Length: 251
Ligand code: 13P
Image 1 (cartoon, rainbow, N blue to C red):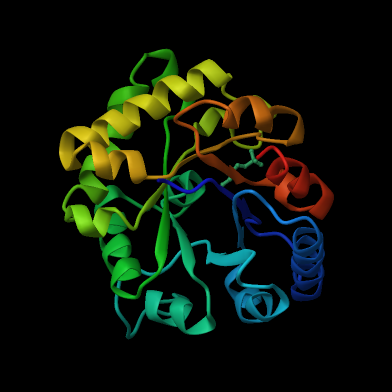
Image 2: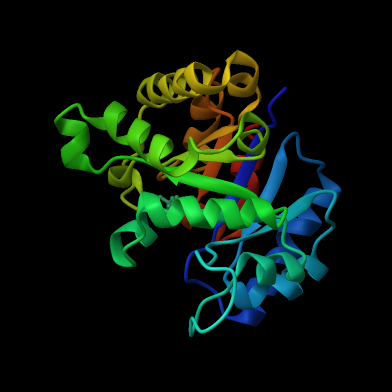
């Protein structure tokens, strides 16, 4: 059966020292209060090696927030999937809407990144989601379906079964405006049906689909109680250990 997961995405926040302090705080809380879900911290690249050492890996996993779409070579400033793997990280967030919007990531480049992540035994936390105009035009179902089809549906069922999805409506990210539990359930169920149509019910049932976008302790329980919402990808509320734990405790 699929895993419930609460993953933090620190984005471009925290110096090395601040980040390791936060990782240690989260770890201490969770070692004392064993979570009922998998917990992941998505840190900046430079934090990963130290963050891996700072946490108990049976309780907290570490994710990179991106990896390159090339294997290695003359790509100044890029970090490959193999490099991420060599740090001890187990996950990589791919296709976040901020990377799509500000750094030109496309479904085609994300297809390459996903292949490289899987080839290096990293679990992709693959982000999809529509912008406000698409939601208002009722195109959100088509948008997420195309994102999934173009970046992921070349995968075999076996490869796809290693992917975690995160539905993050762009209009809910960092805005304080969350999708309603009904909106989240509706589109998560649609995403799961899309997976079932391609890979069959078993793969679809076993895929974790997280919700992201202004998720916090006060709304997490309502969102996560939906049958097709298997946890969250958390931005702002992952930057303070107590706030993040409030979300984890929703499970
Ligand atoms: P917020 O939780 O700050 O809205 O960010 C969500 C997000 O983008 C996680 O990847």
